[in-house]
Image (cartoon, rainbow, N blue to C red; front, top):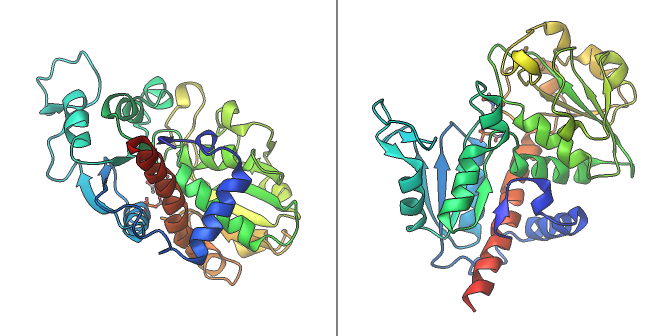
Length: 322
Ligand code: AN0
Ligand code: CP
């Protein structure tokens, strides 16, 4: 595998899950595979989990790791071609990418949606330039429209905790004071659509996601109705996608906060969130602290999803070297 930006890069999910479970049984089984290979992680945005779990995964495989926080100590990077660079950006991505690529074997990129220009975001202009100009395997650590390492960890977690072959999984919008990308929700929906689960999305009117990601999901505007009989509640905020509202916060209505009263409508569902989460906006203290909350094991599985992807990329590099 030389690229990982969506579920479609992974091939059959069953096989990917098997590989992930093998890694989970013994995460040091391949600790020589990455010897003398360097992972470069490039962050255009903040991170706690992605940064630590991906670095840990690379170390489990014996890799060296370099981390670059573009906004802390590097030159500010221009990402659009043709711009007269007389502003605050000292360097262009078109030079920076091949330079950075010359120091490493695999590149991870975190670059959130700007939420101003929908075309720029939905064409994934930043990560696509890394894929095109680096000549190295590239994976997403959350790009403009997807967060596949998160969704892969979410899937692993659901597989570990489900008690029926076809659980009901509900993705619910929840309020947040600032505009957030649609990436986590898009990606989760994309992955759920690849499974046999019953999948429902619930959100207030105006928060419709790109139909390409909604796929075969049932969209239910009544959150309480959506929660009925659910086995997994996956909460996430996102800003508006449609029309002129792109990137806007249309509502911070705390009537959509996930609380114990709503969880009581479910079939004793597990609660999931990718974190970071704002308590008592997205979810109440008691729900996130309850026995049914999976937020910690879910985050722990980020190490497993990252290691599965890195292992495949190392195999691709080693095979090409032969
Ligand atoms: C980011 C988002 O919603 O995309 C990252 C989530 C993993 N969240 C925030 O910026 C709070
Ligand atoms: N879930 C997740 O990607 O968290 P970070 O933004 O902390 O990496």
